[in-house]
Image (cartoon, rainbow, N blue to C red; front, side):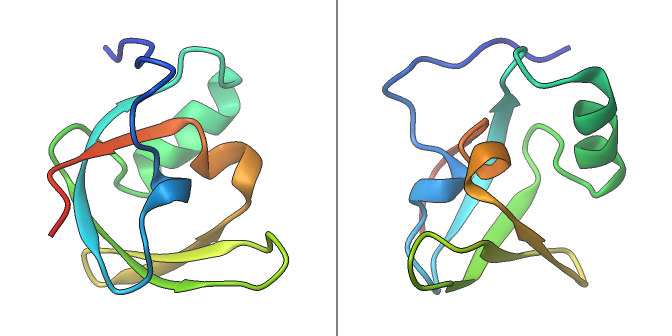
Amino acid sequence: MYQLFDEGAMTLWDIPAKKSGLISGLDNALLPAVTNRLLEMGLTDGQSVRCLRRSPMNGPVVVQIGDCVYTLEQSIADKVAVSSLS
């Protein structure tokens, strides 16, 4: 379903606040339960995601997927590849 993205790929953690991108993959190293939850949240290939806010001191990143808003910690956001920033 998803391929392990390149180590140099941009991740959800790298998106600056107020920028959007497209989900391009999930890291196969994620636990199956985490992968399933991310898919339930709508983090699927080609889905648009917008970074609303970055918390200070490496706190969670706040993202919008469709009409829903989520917070993701770095250990998970670092495993979601994104492309096509706008």
